[in-house]
Amino acid sequence: MLLFSLILSLLVVSLFFETTQKQKDRHLDDPSLLQMREFLSNEAAFSPSLPVLSLLYEKGELTGHLYLYDSKGSHGSDLRVGVENAFVTPASSTDLPTLLLRAGERYDPGAVSLSLPFLTRAGDFPTSHVSSYKNVLLVPGKTPYSVNTARYNELAAGAGFDGFLAHANVRLFLNRKNMGVYHLVQNFSSSFLASRYHFKRSDDMEKEEGTEAKVFNAFHLQDLFSADLNREEARAALEEKVDIRSLLTLYAMNVLINNPRFPDYQFRAFRAKTPLPDSDLPYQDGRVYFVTGGADLAFQQKPDAFADLMEQRGYGADSVFPHLMEADAYRQLFLQVLGILRRDRFTDEAMHFHNPFLDADLQQ
Picture 1 (tube, rainbow, N blue to C red):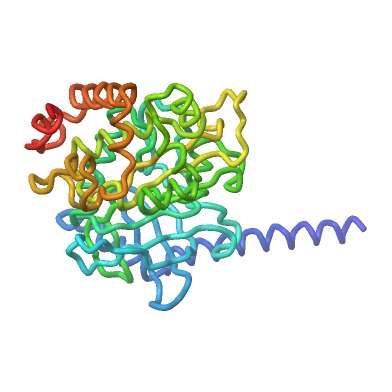
Picture 2 (tube, rainbow, N blue to C red; picture 1 turned 180 degrees about the vertical axis):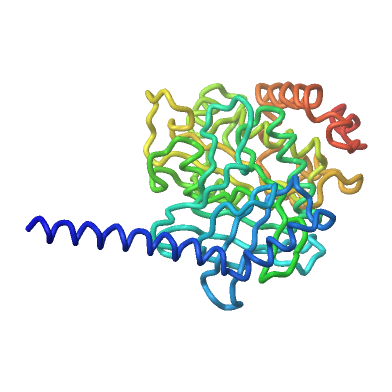
């Protein structure tokens, strides 16, 4: 019996070392790793400040193999991921693909999520700092959509608005082809929102995205917005369902960056399905909160986004904003929020942009 136990132990140890060696050999022999090491050894071709992602996948296949390297070129991890072609906005002016990567047991047994510690947020916010993801977006890095949306989110974060989406610059290799700089972007998904806003499960919250009218209809808010908001009881009823400061801040930021596609494009909101009004955690009260969207046409001295909102034309045709501004309390709050944003964060210097319409619009 003792001899049998000894033999069994030796077999287990042998299998362990054999498995470990196979894993090491896989990394040593992997052609993608070998090619990447050769590339990274050429300092003239590599920016040491950027992490590197190498993705191998066949067109039409549901999964691919993702290799991650840190900013010094050291191999970090690899796993199989789901790969989907995501939207490319008409204004993106590129034929480079936008990709949605998905992680989980379905694609790679034992890989619950994608660990991306460099894609997280700094600052004092009441939400979680997410570093592990079920899904994440890869967006070409030199398009109006990626550049302007990244700038918008950085400004929102600097202003303390906790509904922004972080991004990180990475160098992407797609099937061993250097695709240049891409943006790895937090995705407006249920799993991400649950992690960030302290929900135990993704099913504990609901989210909507699209036009402003679509989102408010989905949350059954149109009647509340159409009421006489100069009446205190009407405002109380609305504020029981909507975080009005979050909404007015979203309007103010898009006015400041002169975003003509707002609020009829990537208007985003979420709420807890079951309110927990006594919870010490924020965002659990069942009210609707708001998240930033795209800003590909922003930061331009062309259409007057504020006038479009107020006159309900163009992308602002169906907005509730003019009706909110008819309420003295909300108009004063909006001007207060806009003034603070403009003074502290959304300055011409920080935006690298001057909104030529703003002063004249606000005087009306």
